Amino acid sequence: MRNSRADVVEAALRVLDAHGLENCSMRRVAAELGVQPSALYHHVPDKQTLLALMADEIVRGVAAPGAVRGSAPGATPGAAPVAVRGSKAGPATAADLCRALRTAMLGVRDGADVVATASAFRLGASSVEAALAELVGADGARTLLLYTFGQAQSAQTHRQAAAFAALADPSRVSADAEAEAEADLDASFDRGVEIILAGIDSLR
Amino acid sequence: MRNSRADVVEAALRVLDAHGLENCSMRRVAAELGVQPSALYHHVPDKQTLLALMADEIVRGVAAPGAVRGSAPGATPGAAPVAVRGSKAGPATAADLCRALRTAMLGVRDGADVVATASAFRLGASSVEAALAELVGADGARTLLLYTFGQAQSAQTHRQAAAFAALADPSRVSADAEAEAEADLDASFDRGVEIILAGIDSLR
DNA sequence: ACCTGAACACCGTTCAAGT
DNA sequence: ACCTGAACACCGTTCAAGT
Image 1 (cartoon, chains in turn green, blue, cyan, yellow):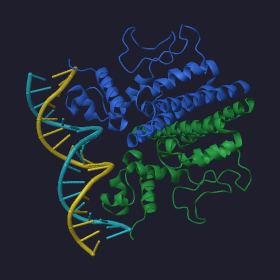
Image 2: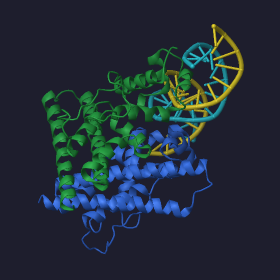
Image 3: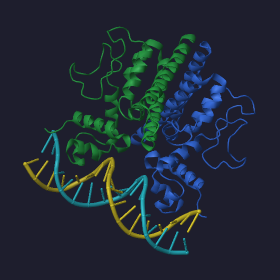
Image 4: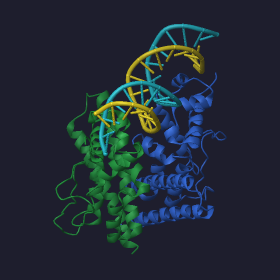
């Protein structure tokens, strides 16, 4: 047995993070595994399904202080495992969950696009939605979730544009300015979450 | 003079609406115009730019009860012109603007994806953002806008999944059920906007 | 079960050349 | 200015055949 489905998803995430969604082709994933393109179709029916599996992997582990779904204790092979802030079995807040989801999506190149495209209809991030719903109700959960998607996508697109601009003109790009822009994006996200939470409270 | 840049954008939007983003290739757009693929590069530097122009066209006219930017009075050739509700020169509310933006994106197949991908960094929908900011402030505007993006994308993805399911099994799909699902999505969107507006008010 | 090799019908983009 | 024709380096997916 040479490769498993998990190997394929892992390799695909490596290619995604290194080369972006645009260049994350079946052929490149196959090359990453040292295998012919056609071999992938033994593990996965098509590219769309592979993208959905990648999205699941990116988002996996976000909604879980204690009650995870199906992950073996030691084996977390995919993207960086994201811990919910203050995850000492303490009750995570809705804001924590949203931040963790955002961090997970921003942790892989084009991760927000992959998750937004693949997961919105097939659930995917639905364990997060369920956790949020328990804290703030169904409507609030959905609002927070969709805002988080939109903001992550926007932040990631901004990031790429900045990277592209830096490539074209490296004259006046400091690491400081980059970090500052990133901090602005983070702060903007937090303010949005604050607004939504205030709205949920005031309508309760 | 055979074709203008506007002709190319128009043709591309026709192909998009008919065949979806996945099949909206430069070669198909060229075929739609009865021209060789290479001819497009006389009007547009690359596909990414064409997508950005399409996004602008989809969103054009949304933020405009009176003060439009650059559209000649009679000529609106692109996608369906979207009027803001109660657009009798009356002051559009923030909710109206968000609904109009959503309607514009949902009006073209995969429109939300095109706008979200192409416009987030290059502004694009920024005239809408400016109009919203005047009504609810910068943070509120951004929150509403990103929520609207996320919700429209999710709604559109749902729609496609439903269409796909109907193709696979047309046995029990009523037009009623379809309309009902659509109405649910609309209502869910409105509740999200309500929450955000309440949050903006309560933090003011 | 897992993979190779070859093929099919496509892509975006470039570039010389025509009118 | 606008377009053609040909080419280059790619795609996703299928399918017979190997082990």
